[in-house]
Every structure is written in C-alpha cells, then in structure tokens.
Amino acid sequence: MIAPDIPDNESSRIAELQALHILDTPPEERFDRVTRLTQKMFDVPMCFISFIDSDRQWYKSTQGTNETESCREASFCGHAILSDDVLTVPNALDDHRFSDNPAVAGEPHIRFYAGAPIIMPSGNRLGTLCIVDTEPRSFCKGDEEILRDFCDLIVAELINQQEAATDSLTGVFNRRGFEMLAEKAVLNARRYGWDCCLMYIDINRFKSINDTYGHTMGDRALKS
Image (tube, rainbow, N blue to C red):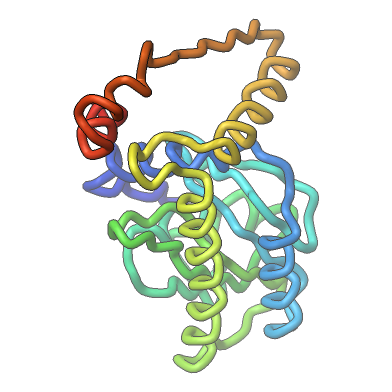
C-alpha cells in the first residue's frame, strides 16, 4: 500500500475545510440525496461524500456502509484530492498503490473506485464524491463527466451554506451560522466531556456612531 502524498497547499486546504464547520456534523438530506442518486446512477453498492482532514477521512454522507471515518493514510480519496481529475481505479488488485490496502485485502473488498475531488472556488480540494464496487469495472470519460456533475452539486451546497451563514458586511457568522456552530460545539462538548462558554460582545453607543458620522463610518466600525 502506498500512502497518499500531502498536497502542497495543505495548510490552506485544512483551514478552508475547518472554516466550513462541516466536520463531525450529522447527516443531512441535501447531501444524502446526492449520494443516493449517484449510487443509483452507476448501480454500485457504495457511495460516499468524504472530507480529508489532517489525519482522517470523514464521511458526511454514505450509502452502503455505516462507517463515519477512516484512516487518511489508507484512503483512496487521499490520492483523489491530489489532482483536479477524477481518480479511477478499474481493479484495485492490479494497482500497486492499493493492491494490499486493508480495504482491498479485507472488508469491504474494494475492487473498483472512482472519486471526483470536491474543488472549491479557491482551488482547494477538500474531499471527494466517490463510488465503490466489489467487482472490477470500466469507467469511461462520459461516466467521469457525470460523476463530476454530481460533485459540482456538493460544491454548490457548500458555497450556499457558507453564504447563508455569513454576514455579507463583516464576514462573521450571522444568526444561522452561529446556531449551526453552537450546535456543533455543544454536541462535541457532550461527546468529549468539555466545558462550553459563550462570549457576547457589544459595541457601546453604536447608534451614536451612525448618527454622528453616517452609516458608512458605522459599517467601517463594525468591520474593524
């Protein structure tokens, strides 16, 4: 087995992934719908949306398995994020990178893999939409384009989530973003036995800034 290389932009990639606050969140229908449709389209036993964290592969949506994460070093998707192209492995037993991979030699006995990288507008490849079969199979350019189209739906959802959860003026979380982040923080606190704390910051006499200097200066004060 050959462990995947680390991308040159790894620090930027991880920072953007963490900024999405999607890791360790519950399943969501908007992503499950994509994996269900992709699984049916290609008639495969397994389909995943995975995000490659610093040392793990975490699954946002899965079809055909109940796993939530796995080791990055043994992941096919770790290889898939190294390029903008769809990574296709017709038969893992014939590929020196994966032939003795634990998921090939043992359960779930992967033979075929195809993964389209989730590419954000920044160019960062955060994870993949991938399909897996226990039998070898071919995958043509047309198939790759369809998988890429499904993957673009995921990117659109991530962008929409980012925009809907962020204040357009300051770039900080709005109410929706705060509620999303707070829910995740509370869940993690319960899971790991951490304490939670909320800090509230107010700008004293903010109305007087607008009244005296105008809303443009008020906006600058908010951004500062």
